Length: 589
Image (cartoon, rainbow, N blue to C red; front, side):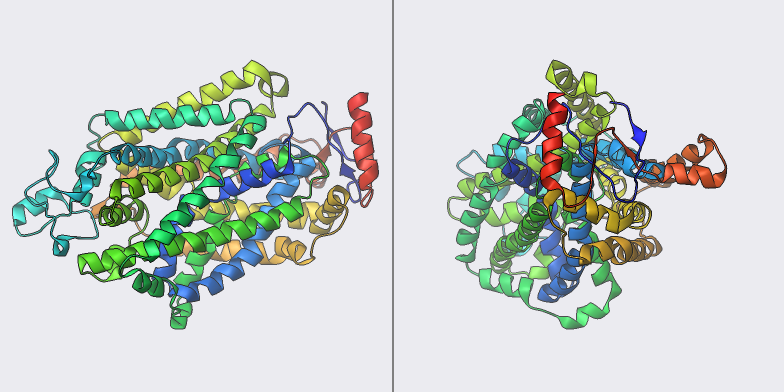
């Protein structure tokens, strides 16, 4: 369809109905959002930040940032997607000068698609390795074990140790779970300059992960909307089973106390507040365009406000719930190993692929619990992965709806996206792949990048398009106005929070490291290019648009800040029934 400038920008709302596929049911959308937002960050990052930043006291800044930043931005992204009925790029026709936000989020999705699924490949490797009578990381009788390996409880160390250093010193010991991760799963080299060959077992699990991902989304939201009924709900069954088992273990109570005991004095540290803010942005998956893509498949009158509240509650509850599981296990592990909990609680892959495998190896029927845990990781990861891929596909397909939106052409396009992302991801399943993975994780979708996206989204909608105006659009869609606090968040609170945390993060930036390995300048340079590849899209598009628009500077700014809406009849706020009626008329015509 052709586009035009809305002649009534202050009061008009556009009713969009085209050949776009829609969710069959509203529950499909809700479960997809839950599956997308609930990911690995809920399982390993939130529990770690809680124990690091004052236990239960961490909930105070977390809840404040959730209310004044996380939920408002979640609602904003879903709402504009539903209202404009476009994905990540063309949705910014609502404020054309900021279409660079859409380009930036699509670039972020491009990077995310390549590296996030590698974590799923690792989880699959552990899952398949669990089908045995004795877990391979529970003893030192494997071909990859060294003479430094020890099964003695006192010999456990909480970080990966360099094998050469251990061999030289002679008196240091390494846990079998460390050696399984470093010497069997990764077979890691000494640095980024030593990539080594492909780890063919990981190539296989990565391929399996991509095949599963493809068949989840190849038919669009009609297929993925049904997959999430299982992938978004069954993990809670597994988590509950594991939690019941874990709290019955010796030492579980100590772990839970360590997790929840508040240390109010930690709130004086600015880093605690920064950690809480960045965790909210990570946890709610804000600033990568996928929520906009999910919202774009909603019907015009879907109650996106209600859905946002449901997803927000489930997402934050899941973070807290996973913390109970993880720290009950770490408490047991602390007792078994004779070490303080602070020495066994690590973040990132160390928590999931070292601490928890060690803990389940100490349980009765260890292979069964291990299978359950890594199957849960597989489901949690797949939800987030295929929604991110869908966000990228939707953004591109909106430019070529006749060719990429439906039928076998879409299926071929999705196959191309999956296959190319798989090929890019091969660099992360080499023997030096962990170093590449860390660059992707540290730069491509870092807190600095997501905070930048959040700030400019608030500027575009809250300040230029108008928070009050979006409220009028929401009233048209759902029949009533949400709480007024969200409008003020878009205009004031959220951009201030985003900018403040961004400035603090930049000021306190630390060089990239993996364990004791410090990345060379050229490796950091590659990472900085990845981060800038998305952030620079915003000013670059604004400059490009201003340079290629006719008229005086004032006229150019006026044109580029006027929404581009498609030529349907204008619906005034509060006329929900009329809006739906005109949708049906438009379809018939």
